[in-house]
Length: 113
Length: 113
View 1 (cartoon, chains in turn green, yellow):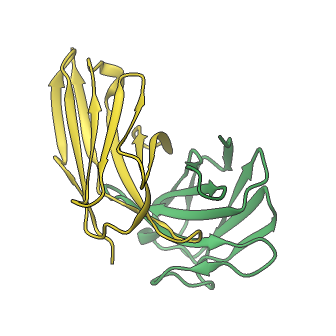
View 2 (cartoon, rainbow over the protein chains, first blue to last red; view 1 turned 90 degrees about the horizontal axis):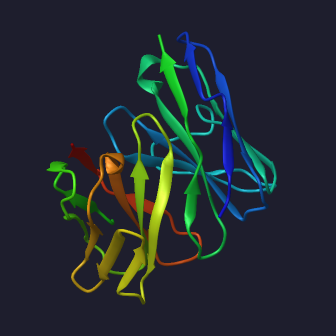
């Protein structure tokens, strides 16, 4: 299994500002993902974070709004840019190694006022 | 496009009861299926992973079955306890090593004293 930590655990931000969320894994992993969970909803994949190259974004998500970095096999960041109240969600980092289970971090609860 | 449905959306049972949560998916070409538990405002905890070639997996009081041809999975919880109260999510992974998880909308379970 993989142990995943995220920082911050929660934050309250003003509209128009940006927040960077960090994800740290205790072992090297091939695949890292970022998900969003809006209030009362299930999880939606934002992007796959690729080590050493640009992230692969899902339909409806763009790099300008959600820039992602992945400098190595244990760390990634997601930035939520120019925030609006609609960005209020839980943001979750997730990892998977090969054909194995997928694991999730504890999430970052973001409230935009 | 894969769609995952979970029934019921919410369930309340008295402590000690055995219960079954249902998950159905529209595309039977899956790589595996995973059941997760999510406590309010928290991340996801992986409960069971069933590979497409398997019929069931067991962990403690939990048993998950998979009928790939009919697009169904069930999560059986024996002798439920108040600590089992949470939202349970199933997610299916499509074929291919880079494929993503598609989540159901979840079943919110409450186990009462």
